[in-house]
Image 1 (cartoon, rainbow over the protein chains, first blue to last red):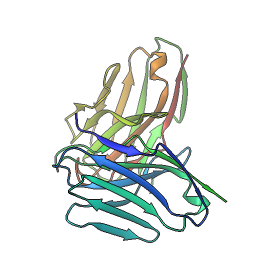
Image 2 (cartoon, one colour; image 1 turned 90 degrees about the horizontal axis):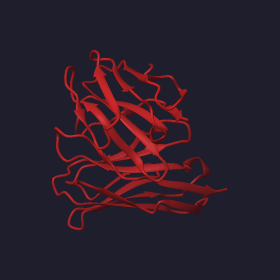
Image 3 (tube, each protein chain N blue to C red; image 1 turned 180 degrees about the vertical axis):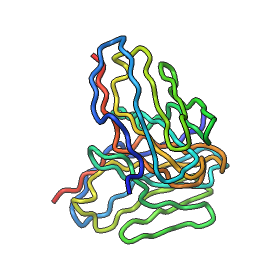
Length: 112
Length: 113
């Protein structure tokens, strides 16, 4: 069974701090690693994504770090803000013709 | 720019009743999906349709059926609802099945009593 394991399940960070969410995968055929953000009462929405040919991708305060040899990738939120409070899902694609597999999610709360 | 539209937004069913959740997208996407979201379980794929005319089972298909009515519409049917099907259901679409952004609807909160 292909899996994407996400941790922690919940995270509390002070405003201005760095939030870090980690994911690990098993299948080395995965070649697309998106992160989705979900606010209460809304559907998930794509936040940022990376492909395994790069080790890091940054968009504003959000950075994905990718370690291909360890089969791990993480989301870093710099200068975390209360508006970042949401549930975050990591995901992975086995190949171009297969569906996305999601992690179980991390509920992030940023203290004001 | 509607994106992915789901109806209804809320529904309460009695055990054994049937209902159909509707989903439509206006982005000319080929692939469509139905997920359920439960606390601590993340997003679990129920069924998906890689293209018009095809459907495939996901991780948790038991108790559900789907119909890809046309390229725009993908419906999810509960033939005999059970309390275990109480959940938030999300429809999503993407240009292709893999390696592309998935766009989600607002969700349907279903309670089976």
